[in-house]
Length: 171
Image (cartoon, rainbow, N blue to C red; front, side, top):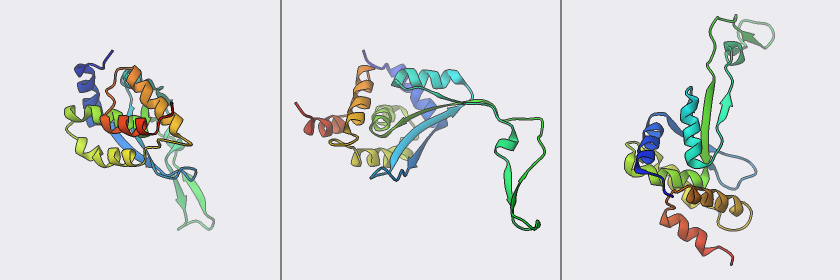
């Protein structure tokens, strides 16, 4: 099985329009972790992204503004505290997040590159993921697992990643 050009084009358009990369700096990690993600109000988009990548979407419930519109008061009140504005009649809608990290994100972005108009915005993150690719020791099992999952789903594993993982594989 192989991911079709139609799937690649659709996914590239979604990443172009709604994609973002964040870099997580976890104290337990030696290097920053890249996270490619899409937040959307349309659950069908996140579901299809998840189906194509073997991941699970994360649903964020709708919330009122008091959940996120809090302002710390330091200027006109005698004691420091948090102001919560009166609850307006609107709320943030439910959103769904699709995310993929590290080597798997690099595999996805490298496959989508010919279809994307914003790939150059992600190129530094792809290079960071390749540079920090864990090929042996702690964490290498997860890298291999995520790359194998994508290969089983029909993603083309870029030669750069394949060679790095093969060089340190155990018989």
